[in-house]
Image (cartoon, rainbow, N blue to C red; front, side, top):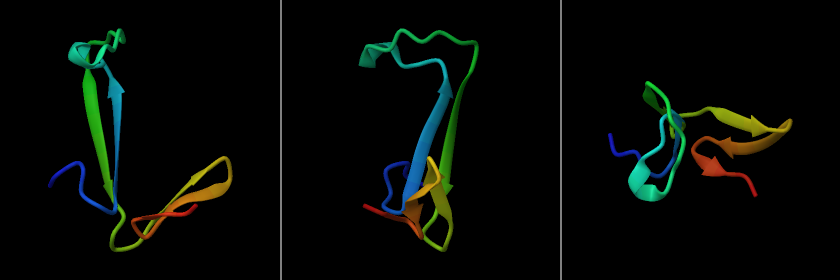
Amino acid sequence: MREEADGTLHMAVGAGISETGSRTQSAVHWDLVFDLRDGGRIDVGGEPFLRDGRYVI
């Protein structure tokens, strides 16, 4: 699965990529990819941010 696919959310936890200017250091780098195209919701601050793979603006 491509991380940039429409309807997905990609988050990374841990070490940053130095080529992008990140100075974050960690023993791990963990990518989390959530596919919300078949349903699902992410709220930020109690307000909907993504619903069914679409941004709620």
